[in-house]
Length: 268
Image 1 (spheres, rainbow, N blue to C red):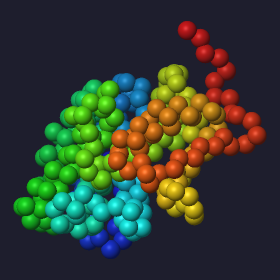
Image 2: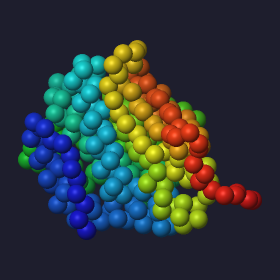
Image 3: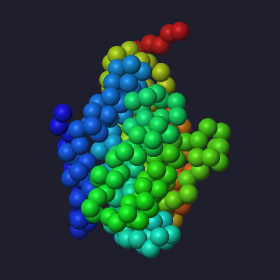
């Protein structure tokens, strides 16, 4: 199994050192494979394996860097522990990489299983880059991002997002919504609003706003208005619950003059 993670390290040697260990870990790669067997082959869900976590990791990193470089936020690990922006990048990338690991167990409460399974990897991934104290802090921050990435049922306070890094991971997870992610379950015969809506999303772009009240534009191109479900039911709650909603403006448009027909007929 060869999973390539093209993470833009820039001038962050800590992130590079950690990711070099992630890339070589056979057990983690196997867990990702198991997550997709459970999600796609057994449950008819979308990709929750290496492609998904790679996309989420890159999106998390992009969002964090925009927010930090534009001086819109101070990462929580910097604010609360006096660590560096480089360490916040490690937190969002590891949070993204581990957030769906619990799918190897089951969908329900998978975020909690993810946190449990991630525990065995922290020490070997963070050594020798970090001291024992720093490893404990990063472990704490990553676990919080993992457990809070899923929207809490009925807005229960138990899953409340309390760090900026966790808010970023949750938004990035929801932004992996382009049609390719839903192709396999749809072709296997899963026709419901989730599948049809996901297949309607053609492209997701993140851009800095040239003007306006909110500095980051999330531009979503849809082939069919069914894609609104994906945005309203999945992306909107993540942004609202992230604590970062003041920075994001979502713009969704249907491409072309006519909507694309996704299914011919639907019967019950």
